[in-house]
Length: 327
Image 1 (cartoon, rainbow, N blue to C red):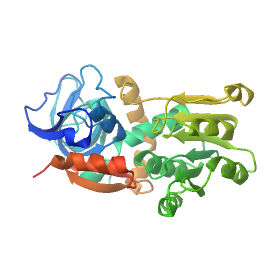
Image 2 (image 1 turned 90 degrees about the vertical axis):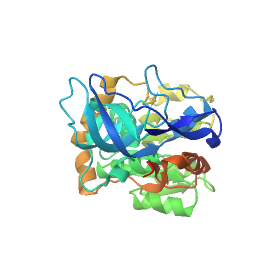
Image 3 (image 1 turned 60 degrees about the vertical axis):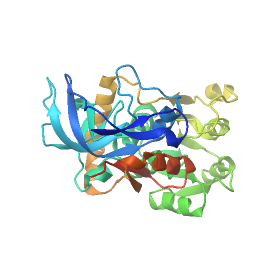
Image 4 (image 1 turned 120 degrees about the vertical axis):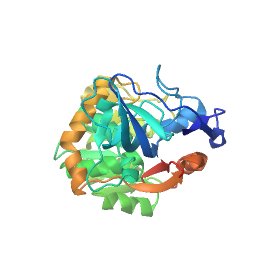
């Protein structure tokens, strides 16, 4: 099979196409003939050498795929050979054949082709786990989504709006701000020219925001904590800026705040299986009816993975990037 190897940790040029033997499905696992694989920021961190795969995982980058099941291991009752699925993987997605735990597979949503379905697992697992399971976002609550046109942001905005929350967003430039409004944001702050903290305090009548989903970090953290309403929750899913921050921790006590965070890859297989079960029950009907859908900004052939990474690092995109195995 053909796959992408990280020849040299560092820049995108370190990604090279190789030929090698396909993986084998173990107990509880399936093999998937990959139709497409999603590109995510953790892939960039792995390429740079700062996010190694967990023990036993494939060193090949790629945390989500879609395709057709070609083989199943012992103990697998679903999916079956021939089923079209999308799957969260611990690694190995940038390849023509990928191994995944059967419990982390989900059926291709009705109405989505396989290439688009590849853009679902990583961001939907991440958003559901952090925004709804950990931060406990409920209908009627206000929520601020930072980076509203990222893969995480576009997913979070749609799910929040579809499930009855009141979403706000930050984005850079009027074009991206309009996309956020189109996805359900009641207001969007242009971070290139506006300070979100005072503006959102004003928009909420000084009450503040119930839940904030932050991918930025750095100086946003202190602003987030000041902006949160009483009993508010801050869900941290990445640090595009600095991860070492200075805050007034007394805010956590005086306003009864919760600051939580997670990375998806190290979670246990059972934790990920539970997220998959909840997604299938709560979110798959929204995907199947088109009320929520992943936004795919660009598709690249697998052998152009370096170009895909360069685009992601530029920030000049809205939604997700997927890789397509060459014919």
